Amino acid sequence: MMSNSALVSYTQISPNCNVPRRQQIRKITPHHMAGWLTLPEFGALVAKSSRQMSANYAIDKDGNIGLFCDEANRSWCSSSPENDHQAVTIEVANDGGAPDWHVSNAAWRALVDLCVDICQRNPGLAGGLLYTGNARGTLTKHSYFSATACPGPYLGGRFAELAREVNRRLTGAQAEPMPAGTALHLERVPLYVASNSLSSAGTRTGTYYLWGTAVIGGRVRITNSPDNAGRPGQVTGWIDLADAVEAAGVRDQGDDDRGLSTIRIAHASNVQALALYELAQALDLVAPGYYRSAYTDTYKTAQQIEIGQISAGDAQAVRKLCEEIGAAYEQEG
Image 1 (cartoon, one colour):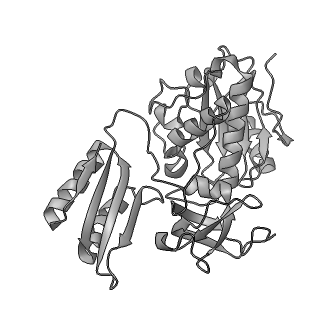
Image 2: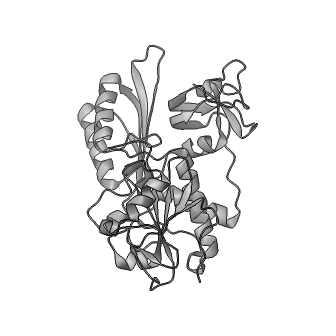
C-alpha cells in the first residue's frame, strides 16, 4: 500500500475520491485555494459529498500540512481524471486575494518540503519534477485541464522555480552562495532588528540588497543600495535566509517554448518609465523579480529598467512601446 507523508499534522479523509487510483503516481499538481482556509475548515469543505471535490493534501498559510485523501486514492481536484489518477494534488492557502492570490513564504516552504517527500517515496517521481509548461510534464497545473486561473498568478508563476528547488534538494546539490550586493525583490517579508529577534519590526516590500554573506541565526543583513553593501552603519535590518534566497534574482516565468527574453532599458525618463511600468502592469509583469528599476541620477529624473524572462508576445509589446516612446533597449534571449 502506498504511504502518506509524515509531514502531516492534521487528517480528515474526504469521501470524495476513487479507491484505489488506477495509475502509478508520476505527477504533482499544486492548486491554490483562492482563499485562506485553515486545515479544519478545508476538511469540513471536502467532507461534504455534495461538494464533489477533494485533494490529497492541503497547506495552510502558516505552512501546516493536512491529509484529506490517501495517496493510494485518486482525489477529485484537477477537472481531469487522467491527471488525478497519476497526480498527488495539493491545495495551498493564500494569504492575499485577487488578482495575485499571494502565497505566504511559510506555505511555499511547506510546498517544497512536501513535494520533495512525495518524490522520495514514489518511484514514478524518483527522477524529480519536470515542468514543461503543459500537461506533458510531471508538474502540472489545474489550468491545463479547465478554464480556471488556478493555481493563480503568484504560485503559477513559480512552478519552474518549484521544480528546480525540489530537484536540487533531491540531488543534495548545494545552493550557490549569494554575493554581497545581490538584489533581493522582497514582498511583505518580515524584517528584524537583530539576528536573534523573536518578533519582527514590520515587513518590507521592494528591492533591497544583501549587505554581507554571513548567516547568523538563520538570518542575513540587507541594505537599501548596492553601494552600501558591507559598509558599517548601512544595515536596514535582518531577514530570514530562506526569504533572501527566495527573493534573489529575476524570476523565471517557465521553462517552456515561448521564447523567453529579458529586456533592458539603460536610460528612460520618468515619463517613459511610467509608460513602461503601466504596460508591464497590464501584462502582469510587475511582480517582484520580473520588473526592476532604479534611478540613474542624483535628481531622480531617469531610470534604468529590466523586465525579466518574459514571453515572446509580451516582449514584442514591450519593444513596440520602447520604439514608440523613444527608449533604447537591449533584448537577451
